[in-house]
Image 1: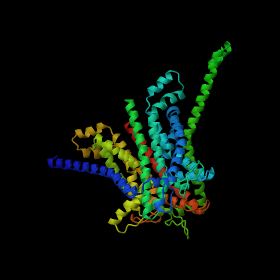
Image 2: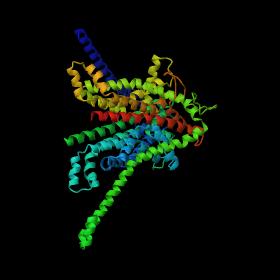
Image 3: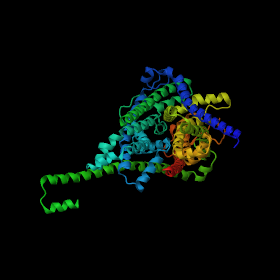
Image 4: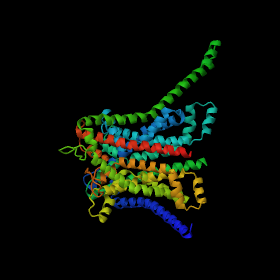
Amino acid sequence: MTSSNLARRHAIAKVFRLFCTVVTWAGVAMLGILLFHVSRDGLRWLDLQFLSEFPSRFPEKAGIKSALWGTVWLISLTAGFSIPIGVAAAIYLEEYAKKGRVSRFIEVNIANLAGVPSIVYGILGLVIFVRFFGFGRSVLAGSLTMSLLILPVIIIASREAIRAVPSSIREAAFALGATRWQVVRAHVLPAGLPGILTGVILALSRAIGETAPLVMIGALTYVAFVPEGPMDAFTALPIQIFNWASRPQKEFHQLAAAGIIVLLIVLLLMNAAAVFIRHHAERKNK
Amino acid sequence: MLKNKLVQKRRQPEKSEAIALGAKLKYHWKEGLIKAGLFLCAFLSVVTTIAIITVLAREAFPFFREVPFLDFVAGTKWTPLLQPRSFGVLPLVCGTLLIVAGAALVALPIGLASAIYLGEYASRRVRSIIKPVLEILAGIPTVVYGYFALTFVTPLLATFFPSTQVFNAASASIVVGIMVLPMVASLCDDALRAVPDSLRQGAYALGATQFEVTTRVVLPASLSGVVASFVLAASRAIGETMAVTLAAGATPKMTLNPLESIQTMTAYIVQVSLGDAPAGTVEYKTIFAVAALLFAITLGMNIVAHKVLRQFQEVYE
């Protein structure tokens, strides 16, 4: 091989490296542009009044009180339904199930459910919870739909956390005569808790931002009250943002941006909590 | 158990022994109950799948009694809400494909290049900055991306291409691309990392440059994983709803011009659910037919991708 060829090959290698670097940092810049654009539009509308007023036809009077409380209700109920069921399913698959056809089938099924578009879950919720069970367009129907949507995420994350618990812990407990459930409850769950919590928080933060299923079950209506029980109608933050963003007036777009800032702050806090828990657990293990 | 019974027969059990036996029985009974409960929770996922299929089929079948299946899948005019009605789904499919193609143009090269950068070039410190940023990008709700497309990308496009319409496929597909980018990057990263280091070192020892190692050794070795990540990303883009509802418009048509307003399958479902189509009408049934098609397409793609990923993992384990 001649030396000019070698120089060419090295030049190509350099160009390729540069390309990969630039493109990757462009992705990072995208986040920066998005955040800058949203805060430039929305920051001036963001004040206490915005948080404490109900939505209104007049942009200067509009706020997100009902949406904020709707999201709090929605996520609390969703967490109540999905965490116990999801963790229980993960425990079954990791600690109890024999590696056979049935557990294999359930596993594949969960992986595929995780890929079902969220709007299909919305249709499921509309037919089953809103109509068939007669829950109407309530917080209950919304949170049950949301629970089905995030269950695969919780199960997959919890399974990973449970799998990461060293088997020596289990074997020691079994050797002392503990039953399977005693081993799970007293040893596997506490040891896997940080991982499970991280997964649960990330799943719930997905539920906070989900819009399509809620639109499907009919949460996009004018709601100027705070829900007082699970059977009340509700609106939620992403729904309110969608409502404002789909209007033509510029003022409402800016209101949407202010709503997005609130939503992103909530999500960022949850992400930070997840990172903190993970970090703390890693330090403890060392 | 049997042994215990024999012991019982032979001599009168003492009281404490009887209690111990009772406790043991209760134990097993409780353990069995717990196991059954846990199994039911895991089985709920199967119930969910069955429920989805049943719900979609129950309304989609009556629809196909009114509208011939062939007219639905091969028709090129979609006007179910206007007279004269026409139920050809191809314009919605075409709109969806336009979005997916645009998103792929953004997400696949950037995602793969990011994965290569993270896996082969970046230092640990750079990695620890970029990974969380990608995670944050992945966690941003789709309605936010829709807002971004509508108020930032579209005006930007309009300055370069004056023919850009207020609602257009291009802006929606760009943000959908940004949305699935972290997924491509992270799955490709996994695939590249699964390639044993010995392969890289062997190629370096033969005098290959970093570019040659990456493109001729690492990429071919991880090709199935990379392709699977592309398929999963495309399936996500097909199912994406809010960004395309907000930014791509509500005019179903057969066009390849990304600057025009189009409608995707998901956006159509949202449009009908926002209006009042009473249950039982044909308009109402169309959303189940469209959703069934959407479900079938995404499910097929996911099954193929997961199968490829699983086989790929087995090769290097």
